Image (cartoon, rainbow, N blue to C red; front, top):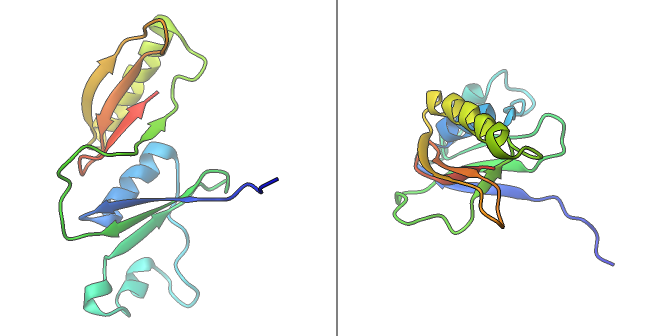
Amino acid sequence: MSSIKKFQVTFDCAEPERVARFWCEVLGYVVPPPPEGFETWADHERTLPAESQGAGFVCMDPTGVGPRMYFQRVPEGKVVKNRVHLDVRVGTGLVGEERLAALEAECVRLEALGAVRGTLLIADEYNESCQNMQDIEGNEFCLD
């Protein structure tokens, strides 16, 4: 029998700290404390070589249950649809108009943070309604 493994979700992006802070707001995650001996992450960044400054940023579930998320700077921009995306579960257990209202409320909150609304997929005989979105760098995700 295999053991359960913890995992990290990694995003390629242009501005790691900006994208990480967006996802902190979306998920209720936090930025971990800076390394020992540093008062802030900015203090730590200043000790790194210039090419490493701003190259990565982390956010994590404050309860330790959800996966750690790592954001790494890459030189190329996003050009195609994600092969993997996050489903942010805001309507779990809700159906019909109640679910649509929960999706809409969260969509409005995330748009204020810079997210972009995509297509609203209405429930059919197999799936519940969900709202397609994009984060502040165009990475697709769903409100589910």
